[in-house]
Image (tube, rainbow, N blue to C red; front, side):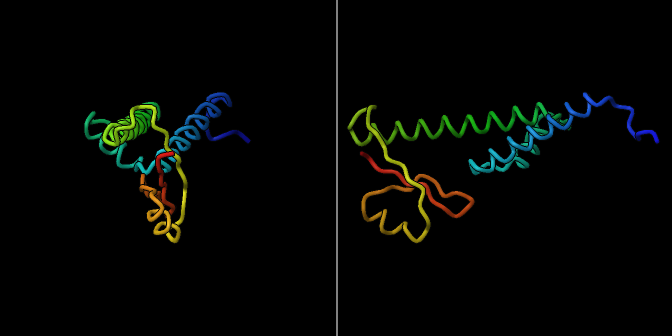
Amino acid sequence: MRSMFNWRPYVLRAYFDTQMLLEMWREQAKLYGIDPMKIRIEKEKELRKKLDPDEEKEAILSEIAKLKIFSIKSRNGRTETNGNGPNERYETKLITEKQLVSHLQEGWEIVRELRSGKIVVERNT
């Protein structure tokens, strides 16, 4: 019996490796609260063509990088307004919604709410 595909095994392996890596980056984006499907659709509209896996990966990575840069800039903005200088340190914690009120009363600030329902909070140390 002959295979339906005339691809060589190494071609199939490379294809599935690419798809697995792309799926990993999609999941990583979701962890950051980024919608990878939205990114893909926006990029396809911008380029007016269907994205190949490498282009989609680059679009996702650039969105993650933008989010990280924004996070760093906002953190630096907070340190400047507090007046303690750029060497100010933060303690970060992942809490549930039930723990939120008590943490806010103790001086913690909300950084981000995750899709899982947990909340990232931080405070100066």
